[in-house]
Image (cartoon, rainbow, N blue to C red):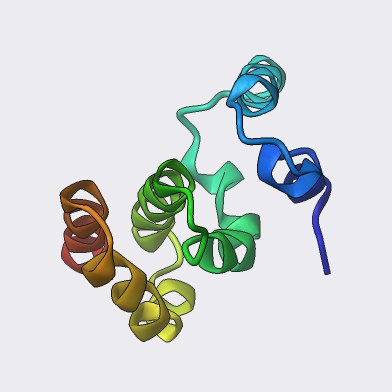
Length: 106
């Protein structure tokens, strides 16, 4: 099932620029306290899916969100750990660093 947030991402709309993603992030930050990690937890499955993106920034953002979620919902993140580590190992240093953050949080 595709979430409202996922449908509003630039990549979901076939765009390669960051304008839509930045507008979406700003909108979400205005609507809620962006520092509240509990707001991310309901989207664990979305972030787990988006780490397979070909766009490194999407992978980095997804892994960063999963690291934040791991402190609140360790069981859910641990269940998808193998699925997360493969893209992180194949990705950039930033992706690998975020994967280490997830492991440390767990």
